[in-house]
Image (cartoon, rainbow, N blue to C red; front, side, top):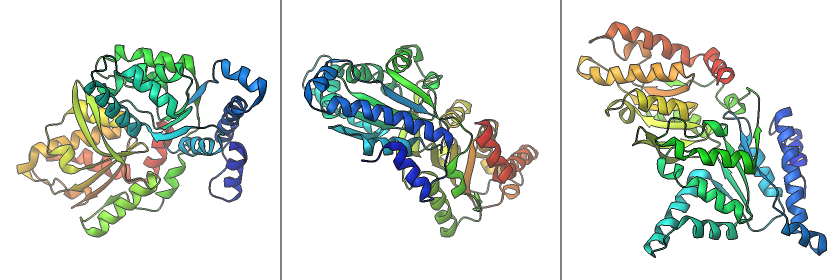
Length: 362
């Protein structure tokens, strides 16, 4: 079977990807882990001796969106000679965990996390988790003990994340109770930064409009096409982000992208903490069906201004469909003059210079 590095270089030769020195270094380190796992799997006295040793450390691979973390983990997973093994999106994995915990508690299991972790470990000697992101207090409160149980049972964990460990669940409710998980990652996993400012997915957007008007089936199709280009053809999953002890629902999320309707963001009583949470957790935000905003919709207009200011200040990329071009969204009404700044920012956020700027500064 080809190594991770060989498989990576084959993809470069086939022009499926471009060569990247940072990616090559990570591929080589993943090959080292694959070799260690293969040695433990082999037969003979030496393999039996190694199985009594502590398993090799897994990896926590972090870097900005589009850096190739998922691709490298998938190459490793496909080449790793270990059974049983499991590869899952972190959010889907945690949904499975919560379902198992619920069933265990129905059976009056006093401490459900430990036995659930033991069963999961038996099902996967290698566990690869994509896009580790803690947005919900329910996950934050159990993930530390869950990983501790998996690692104690000998499961090797490889995970990807857009954030370094110390930035996980930042500003989350009761974050001090989450800090042991961050320390656990540092102690039990090798933390690898996939450095570099190149977001390879952004080449898929080059030449495409990112603010489509007017509203139409064509505009909807264009936005859907861009969503699939930036999420590696994934529709995404809904999730909840914890904001000051309450839940902010994200209708669709995948690969650092979040997708909302205008109504989701501006017709509900959301405020600065909500928009800051979105900007902190996602690097590209899709907003569908921005309507014309007149004096009778000044509250929605104020929220929209706040949303754009927050995304702009955080250097988040915006893709949207709108009934009107930016300068015609809110032509009259209270504080319409303040909307001139929003128009200017919306124009800048469509520019190639802005998209390049967000790659460098994020």
